[in-house]
Length: 502
Image: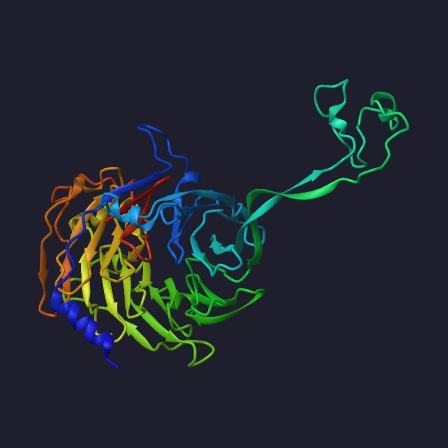
């Protein structure tokens, strides 16, 4: 009955896994030195599917680009040949698959408001019959896409091919009734040689399916007009039938098959908007239990709710928040406490949250405080005033966990991202740069354990002086995703997609 506990205790006894050495794998959309980046090309969302065989990115121009894994396909060699190959670390390799225009810029005439085409979130749905399905959303509208390979159909077996007119070197344009636009209706009898006695039989043209295939993306459903505020999250349920969408004040529940109706399950809008003290910043379904979900707020708290309790989940099952240290309050306290992203671990036991300065790991069975806290860029604390003036303090960084839950990662400025060991006793704290040489910013990690058993790591100042002067606040790594089964990370630096493995 307690096999899981035995496994956990044996893992703890064997100690934390060794630190990974991260290597560059691939880059898509690499910029040359001095090349200008167009606003519409900047990546705004990244997501692996559950199998890890497909990767999707969305950009500010409303496009969704799909990549597929190539290294898992059978290359025809035998297992013995593969075993005799020189030992190398296998890592996912991807290639471009297809892209499509998901959203277009719109205008809300009732509110005189422009709606950007920027993709805010992408979520993969369960594949079926060889087709891929995914959800994408901008600020207001969610779309359900089906991407499938279709065989190309061609017309063949005609008696006469009018394009082979001996008097012309190129095909003539056709009009709707099938004759040429610039010739009389009886031109065939004048220009084409007929055999003596005419054509013995007339073969009607046939539509033949060729072996060539073409990827086609088709929008199956559009979920619109359900949010008054900008959508910040979408998340699939484990039942494969429903998903949630969240804006600043509400969380709505949808059925994938029903686009004209949703159910409001969380509503934090007060009767008087002047009483508004916090907003919803992120929402995520539990990966196993389809009745549970979590959402974070701008006050730094996470609420776990159970939809079985009531139709409108005004009351939460559990509240996760860290008590404020006495005497530490300042003008920036509430701003930097706002959680920008939350993610469940694969087994649903832990929640990873990212606020402006830190990553925090929460055990859903322990609501007294986080089990671990990781300082992402603590050296920027003295510069909060500058960050506030240039609006960088409002940047929303995403976070991710490895498939086995042993590591966590998030981005920072100067196109840097940080990877921390989440296993008990681990001191791993790597700083990497989104470039072909990710380890060049690497510095020795220091760690310390506090009296409350909360691990706080990463407070060193990698790649910059104590004031953080070396950091470039215009280059920020906001979006990243961890491969579901392997130690591989995909991250976006402006319009470039970098991939690393460890």
